[in-house]
Image 1: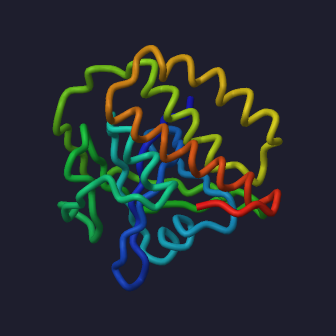
Image 2 (image 1 turned 90 degrees about the vertical axis):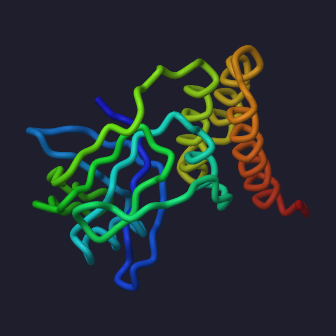
Length: 191
């Protein structure tokens, strides 16, 4: 099972990198499997740490992919790093094993500190739709345009029916990113 999270890693100059990441659990360890090349991969290999955040604010997912900062960071407690200020929970992670792969290595991370900050109320359909669109937007180079536009049209139904202001804002950011990507591929001018 894959869980959608926000991973914050640090480079060797202590600059944080915030990105959505689907993780899985294996034998009590968090498994992060970034595609190469990856800033997250480089950072974790260099520093041996990361922070996993669980949030229901989908603007963080969209903002990380569209370079719109929709968050504030606070220092981590037990490792050198940062966590989201507005997060439901965070876990501070230490690298314990790397399973190398030419395309997608696996980073096995031990939880060294975990805190529940707020209760999880559940996702509405628009939040789930935004997360799905974020996954699509992160893979535009890998997916056929027809698949992306068809799934986007279907996900739009949930957004139209159940979105609040945060979800609408995140949806706009992601649709703009996707439209700009395809416009650039077609050689069109875009804002």
